[in-house]
Image (tube, rainbow, N blue to C red; front, top):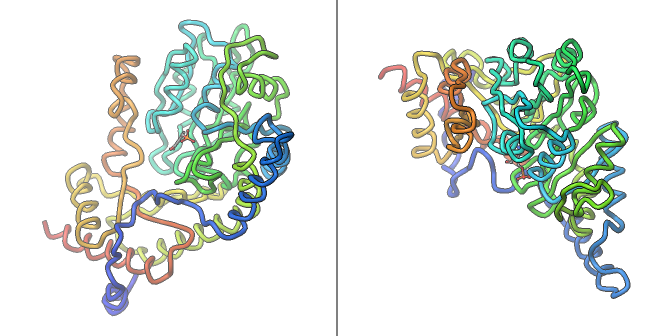
Length: 401
Ligand SMILES: Cc1ncc(COP(=O)(O)O)c(C=O)c1O
């Protein structure tokens, strides 16, 4: 842990003038290369025989590069992760009463995609160490109506895909066979799993290139990766009104300018992730010995992308005292924190009404202790040290309350 002298030194760093959000408004780093790529794509589109649209170059190049990055056969661009989740859920052609197991500790997008595709959300519990959907709990919730297992790669780290896939294989659906696993990797672009990149395992994976995410295509954008030709064909079709698939569809396409910038960002992604990891590890080192804070846990088979730096406080500090800690960091040190995420049935009424009678007590208890602290790949070491020192000071004061 930081010594008293190091804490004093670290806190001489000027209090940030702009409040540092836990999820920065720009999660990646942009340079002149992105500007040049965007301008070049605009100039090229100014030719009246070319224009901006219709899946033209460099959209296929971005898809191929992203598929190669993830080590899978297909990648399909779309305008954000939400429609990507919708398309993949709809590809299952769910019937009323068909069930999809989703962690309740989640952003609203994945469970809403199940609703939109006509399925029944079944909430699964998380592993309290990793915050990922727990395969043991999933297995206990499988019924003959289970059509998919839908983990989120929580806060930048991979869900335990191999274990979840094994659960799906052990309990094949009577008509459709092994239960597919679909990953929401909106927050986990560039993270690793089992020596490869997130995006390879399971039936399909959905990524976000929203402004806050690990890389961004001008603030919005998404990608579906898969090794399944039928899923890729279906998504390609329904992102443009669904005529080839003879299915419902709408327009969910990415623009050429976004794809041009996406190619540049993809080339820098490993650098962003390396920077995030270095800052996260350094912070964990500085907090070591501060017994009230449990820093993020990373299993040996995962390479965390640290989209968020997710910590736990002790059980005795759950709820009010955790909230007070976050408030002190925000008010006194301008360090933003966020609870990502409470069970989605507590934050969206439509999800609560859809899943009446279902609760996940373990997830509720864990998320009353959870909080995420600011982290950004461009964060200076001085700011990182200031954040760690501020956390130590706040915890020391809270100990006495
Ligand atoms: C876990 C998760 N899934 C899905 C989304 C939706 O992403 P998008 O904004 O690209 O639609 C988000 C965005 O914050 C997210 O955090």
